Amino acid sequence: MSDSLRRLVIVVRADPVICGHSVEARNLAEAALLRGFTEVRIVTWPLEQLERSGLPLKPAESITPYSPGIVVERPDGVGDYKVIDGRYLAGITGRLVELFTDGVPTVCMSLYLSPHTLAVSDAVRVAWSTGLPVDVTTIAEAVGSDVTNVVRSCVESGQYGAAAHVLASYLSSDRCVAVSEYTRDLIVDSAALIDERHGTRFAQQCRERITISYPAIDTSAYLELDEGELERRLAARGLARDGYVLFLSRLTKAKGVDDLIAGFARSRAHAGLTLVIAGRGPEEAALREVAERSGVADRIIFANDVSDAEKPYLMAGCAAYVLPSKPRPEFVETFGIALAEAMLAGSGPVITADTGGIIEAVGDTAMIVPVDDPDAIAAAIDRAVLELTAEERREWSRRARDYALQFDRLAVFDKLFDGLVVDRVPG
Image (cartoon, rainbow, N blue to C red):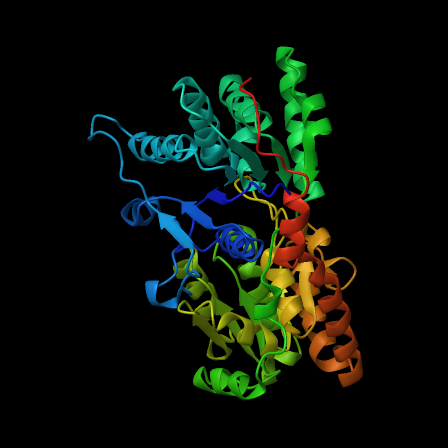
């Protein structure tokens, strides 16, 4: 990496959004400081706009502060009500233009192609047009839902122009990455459909340009947890070590929580366990109703106030961590950051489904169940809790942790930034 790289700008839906990639952005920002960047800025959306969006948000008091040297910017919108929805994007794009033309060598990374890579691509074009000195290198990361929710839906609905806009902006970046092989293949397949229908040439460029950069995780937050603190945090929730099955993620249909509730109720092990459903999301009210009708409502706890600091302890203390994700038109699990975090924490066996990019996150260290199969979930819970010996559980956890260590934020950062050169000529 060139010694001239000094500023990193990350454009993302940042905290308080409940999303693995907001955490990934935080981890990349922290890694940048450790690797010698003197200035790190996260450019994101105003809080009131995030609240209006309907995205699941963490309680403000549960968010871990960023390290000194990381600045979070939330540019105001540009214009008034007559600029219907673009004024906040204009605010972000305008701020990026200012950062790209102030003379500081900058790397700018966008997570989510639409709208963040679109904003970066537009800002770079405008920056060059000003005649001011520009020293910026761009990295665009496709996380998957930006492809399923935008590119693929555009292909299916015949909105060629919108899909072309996203792909062209992506490919205009200096480095194009995807969070998994699954995501890369999804992009190439979508591009090939556009090429077939409209005579464009996106797919070959995607095959040649896109590399894999798995999400960055702060592994130190999950390793060597204090046993006394673990016991205190579990006791505060009325929990005991290995006395509960844990789900911790967003509460959406694609996460399969309804199947987990049904599987937990059908398991033999449930009589001695609690099911903890931790997280927030649009399906929370509906899932509480599912739990009430399950027949085991007295053994199910919903926790929508789990802090960043508490999460590793909840994961470390559970008898099994279960994420039975299933593909939905609006979302497919393209990696599974929470799975890797649970593996690092040394939880009981991870139980999940072979969908999207999940296998890349867990390798051969998880119990895999079919999607939409509560009976298989029940059997996996019983195996994890009732059938494995203590030694087998320890070995399971050891293998899982060893596998997940590859996602350490410094290792991911070094690979992602290796060979980047800032000096560019406009083109």
